[in-house]
Length: 418
Ligand code: EPZ
Image 1 (tube, rainbow, N blue to C red):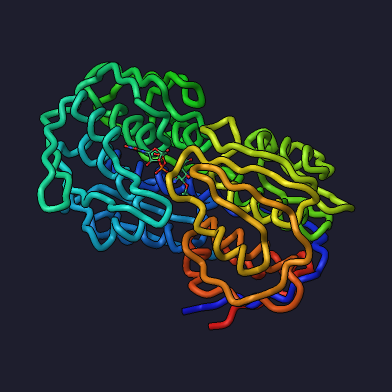
Image 2 (cartoon, rainbow, N blue to C red; image 1 turned 135 degrees about the vertical axis):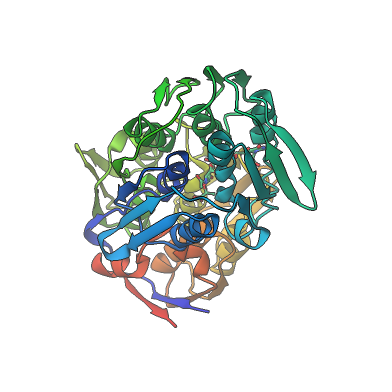
């Protein structure tokens, strides 16, 4: 298993471009199941989760042509022969559960493994299943699989118990081919939802209200193929801005709209960073250590849970104390014991962590546990004195394209050890 070796203490400076958004690309690739015509997707990030998605689409019978160097994917779901997403695949990437909506909408049947938990929480899919039943799907749970079938999904009025990103995506896709209109209430409003809706509209879907809590979809008999370019990855961008902040540097991240990260930028400014918001880029500069600042993670447009671990690394070296409250996932503090190994002073009380900024952090061998925790440990290593060695960085490769290259480009002393 690959490791990452970092020699801390370098100030990061320069420009870096973000890749396409992982969390937009995954549902958008699965949306190709909704049409028999070929789809071409551009700016698809070269990540493990993308390869997993393409493997699942191929297993279902889709014809997939992947050009990772051009960040381009061509998919034709004309001959879908299999409607089963197996456990060994779904357990490696729970986002696969969004095949349910498209398979039911187009073929009237689907057999998808329950995702099982992951490091950050149980992550059930009850909201997805309850909503699909309201659209007329018969759903059984058999030996760890969701077995679903229907004649043709019917438009329905659905209110989500919680603005779940995955459930909103699954149901928006399911509704595009349903009979009649579907009204989804209490939807997630993340920019990745809007990107998916744009891709679906490029396929001829009729969707309004994406990005607000109420989404309306008028079902159609069929959708056509599309050419679509995925949006920039806002969490990747936030991670590189965090790297600039924690090393008191100056970095500009290119290729995304600042508004999609506004809640994070506001907190960076509260903690003392200087931010400039440009049309398609964000710059952060910081000349003194961060100030202790409290955050609470909430659904978009609030502070995103996917930036919580990264912000905690910054707070570990801040002047003063801070409280970080995680309200989205029940176990998303796996980075805390590892940051403590670097010398951080962090105490967990239920959903909140109290961080007392301390300097210096001292490099140490660390263990990555999940995607954003690995990013947090990398940030810690950038500022810790001496050498930090991070094990199991396959977690990092799920969501960050060539992170060590991009950080080296900014002046970090970091290398991947095969
Ligand atoms: C998406 O996960 C993202 N993944 C996550 O990013 C992100 O953290 C999360 O949204 C929240 O923003 C992708 O887009 C591929 P949810 P998702 O459904 O859809 C509970 C990353 O680091 N819930 O909004 O799974 C659930 O357990 C990843 O890139 C139910 O209880 O998130 C969680 O506590 C990590 N029942 C909360 O809702 C359900 O049926 C939010 O989950 C569905 C969700």
